[in-house]
Structures are given as C-alpha cells and as structure tokens.
Amino acid sequence: MAGRDCGVVCAACANGVAARTPDVRGRADASVAMPGFAERTEDWMAAFDCFVSPARAEPFGLVLLEAMQAGLPILATATEGARHLARSIGTPLVALSDVPSLARALTAVRAQRPPRRHYAMDAFRVEAKTAELEAYYGAVRARLGLPDR
Image (cartoon, rainbow, N blue to C red; front, top):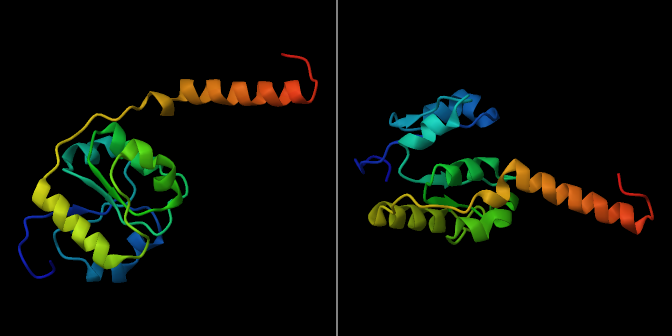
C-alpha cells in the first residue's frame, strides 16, 4: 500500500522504544500519527474504525481489552495476550511475524469495513476478577487446612 492513496490513516500509540526511535518516524508515511503515550486511550479508540495489533509480543493484552471496551473490530497477531483473549475477540489471529498474512488480513478488513461490535466485558471487570482471586485463595487456604478469614 505504500506510495498509494488507500484512504487509510494510522495512529501508532506505542509507548515503547520503537515509538521514540527517530528511524521509525522517518520510515513511516506522513499519514501515520505517532503521539506516544496517551493518558486517555478511549479518545483515540473513539476515532478508530478498527484496532490492529501487529505486535510480536503482548504478554497481557490490556490494549486489546481497551479496544474491546471501545467496541472496535480487532485484527491481532497471536501474541500471548491475544491468545488469552482469542475467544472474546472472536476473529482469527494472525501468526506472529507472518507479514503476508497480516497484509491480506488488513486488506480484507479495509474491504469489509466491519462495524463496531459488542464484546462481553463483564468477566474482565475488577469485580469479577476480585471474586475469582478470592475464590482461588479460598481454595488454597482450604487445601492447606487454614481457617477462613
């Protein structure tokens, strides 16, 4: 797509070393915004049509949860975090470092223009996770023969 007007504007909201490397900025097309760390990711997410995570490593996937909260269609590589959330994401993950497959998936997303969607987020809310942790530690305490608190 480089060198052609494909009507796509990207935003790289990375906070890692790559986002601060002048060489990365120099190689990116002028239509790629690189704002760096964003205090209010929901503002960026509201402007997106789709969320793409081409990451080679994403251990937890908080950014994917943020995209889900915004209702964005998600295209992601099969990182640890994306695999953990794959059922909830509901779209096939792209193999890590498979650039041709990622390019095909991006082309398909652009052609389909998938609508925003509703993700079941209740299981990821702090209240649900707190209950899971309490149940887990309660079971550990019971196995060890420790009294309930």
